[in-house]
Length: 77
Image (cartoon, rainbow, N blue to C red; front, side):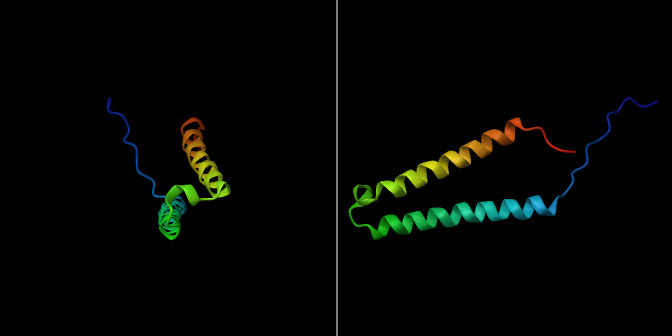
């Protein structure tokens, strides 16, 4: 009788991998677009419309909420 614990196998899920790649790609493209937008406005942050700032704030809150929710929601089996 062995007292060793069963080893956990690593399950590769291609759908989660593809979704993760697209999320990272979306974040990178958003950062590049934001940088290009800031370079377009010569005056810096003072000439950015308030609507754009609120969009960025709500986008950041969405990402933070998604990360926080991921920690507290139990995983499906």
